[in-house]
Length: 163
Image (cartoon, rainbow, N blue to C red):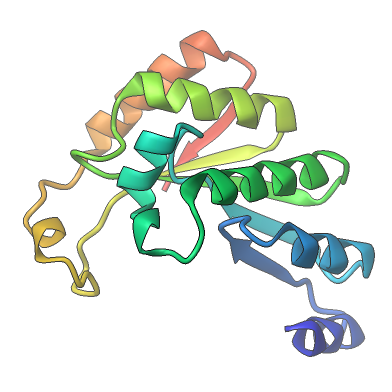
């Protein structure tokens, strides 16, 4: 990845990554090397063990969810000390992440970072391995607009968009 980002620099192309934030040392290295112009960070859920595990299915990982959450928080701390063009991405998944109370917790993080926040509706576009996700009703644009409106009421200065 470093070589590809260096090539982008050499060709004067803007470069960035989309990450879940679980590798803060790698993120810091890339930022210190000034190889990134922008970054998309997935925040899949609030940082509560129970919700995080349910959304990320972290029990299938080789480290505990509490360690993953700590790493993501460390990445957020690193990003808070930079001026990189940062966008937080959260996917609204019916039956997993859809409650406005959960999104308020993520909104606090976004507000502190002062970055853009992109809410995306879950899409079962044929790449889903777990069949139970392929039968979910997808969140409607109206539902997403309603979530955005509720978040903006509580956090009026937040920069939030829908994809």
